[in-house]
Image (cartoon, rainbow, N blue to C red):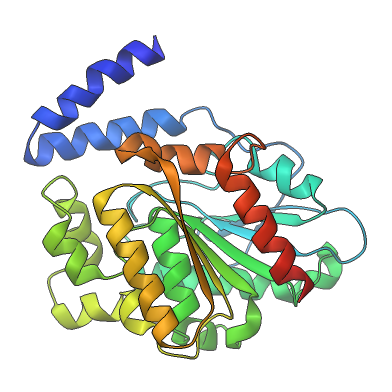
Length: 298
């Protein structure tokens, strides 16, 4: 039934226009993540006063393991730590001996994208402050995000104002892994991203060009930044261009970065990279595993 639904929905996405197309895309995204509940065994903590300022934490094996922190997607206006990690990440990364955390953050329109980036930084600060109790190494943390979460992770990793406000230095994380994000360059994304997501981008980033530039990781990529980036994308025109643009800006600023293109097209590929990351049969898993091993042992 899922396959039949998918085949029917894809032509509808192509034929629909404006708000109708955006609604169909959002329904598709919700269906693709439905039922992907995070594995059991998490400890849940509040890192702020808002009900959405919470995170789940899974303890790693051994003494003082590294920590991987995941930031969910959802167009800056939806999504949850409870169903956004995909089926494989927690078991895979804890199986490698890492601790794992998945964070919630406040959502647009009740909060701003600036608030969301600060939530990500504050969650990292909270985790670092509890490292002794939770049993991980606070000096070996990597931030990973998907879709809108990739944008937020990249923004926090390039614009050090968020870390500074949280009492953190640029090396508070060892690196950042954005998974098939967009809006790394917000003005370009809004010009070239097409009408399907135009309403979502305007709701998130507004119409003020100065604010759009300030929320663009590509335009904030001069040092200081997080120490290293691993940027992954699938075959989407905007995601590819945005990923390559961010990588070029980071390299120009002297920040080490790797970029890898993975199989998968369009929205299906966009969802696949998140659902399958951590699956040993997925090509992206080996790329991330090798990169994490390097940055965690440096």
